[in-house]
Amino acid sequence: QVRLVESGGESVQTGGSLRLSCVVSGDTITSYCMAWFRQGLGKGREGVATIGADYTPQYGGGVEGRFTISQDDDQKAVYLEMNDLEPEDTAMYYCAAKKKVFGYCIGGHLTLSAYGYWGRGTQVTVSS
Image (tube, rainbow, N blue to C red; front, side, top):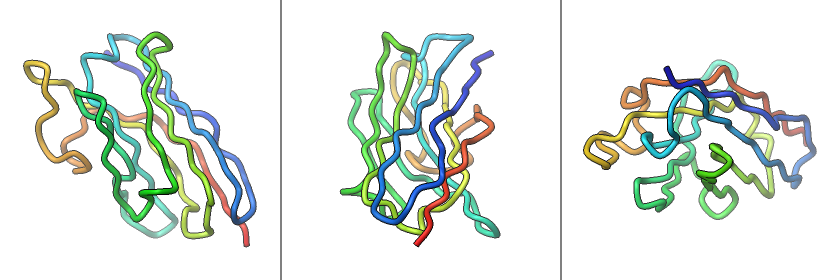
């Protein structure tokens, strides 16, 4: 059973930067398509970034240009570099994974229901 553990969430001021990490254990990271989601207080969970089978990133939630997703297979980890943070970015950030099918990532890239494995989240708070 794959296990995902996030870290790196902190309280920062507007314009600050953070790097979130998600360490994968229990299975081979290359067997999964990885993504980051977030959920603000009183809001639904939304897809922020995903990295495809060919390591091509895709972004949602209006973060493109500020956030960068990357994956290090040797470290068994996926990262989310966040720059120019805004109060609207305040949320619990979750790492998510879905099993590849014949080496491909199928289903919606940032569709919540497509991901079957989740971490417990790491809190990011951006103050103005």
